[in-house]
Amino acid sequence: MLRWVLLALLIGLCASAGEQKAKKKVKSQSLSRGWGGGINWAQNYEDGLAKMAKSQKPLMVIHHKDNCPHSKDLKKAFVADKTIQKMAKEDFIMLNVVEETSDKNLAPDGYYVPRILFVDPTMTVRTDITGKYSNHLYTYTASDIQDLADNMKKAKVLLHSEL
Image (cartoon, rainbow, N blue to C red; front, top):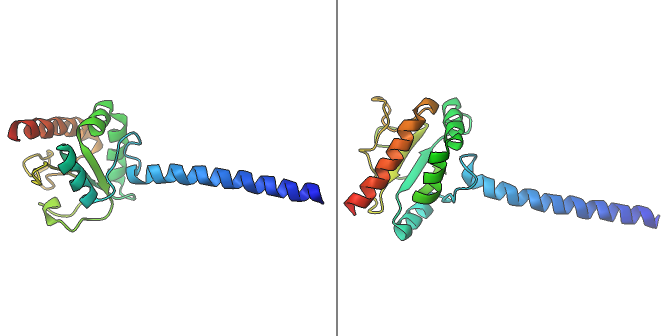
């Protein structure tokens, strides 16, 4: 009988330890939402603005939906591109949101996904940095990943030349 109690206790401890480890992994993945685990993601728009003001790095806001096939394709391309991952990690404050923010400046041409906008440390949404589509200026597809990388470089250069 004592053996069964000890065995049950041991199994309980092992399961608890595994559960704790899983919770930590889920928390760190929750902010990235699959867009890049090595990137320090802001928790929300307000957190992103505060980090941006402190660091003087531009904020890159990715609007997406978990169930959108275009968002999923863009996410895969974003994660696979080492240049974009490096810039995101080193040169930007990053935020990805699945729920719209209350700031209407982050939807200058409408609410659609995927949509990526840049905000500079003066709190100016960079409406001049657009993708290639005239009907959705701030959208990018997986095949537009080089355009996104170029626009990230442009956001960095504008930041340094304007401040």
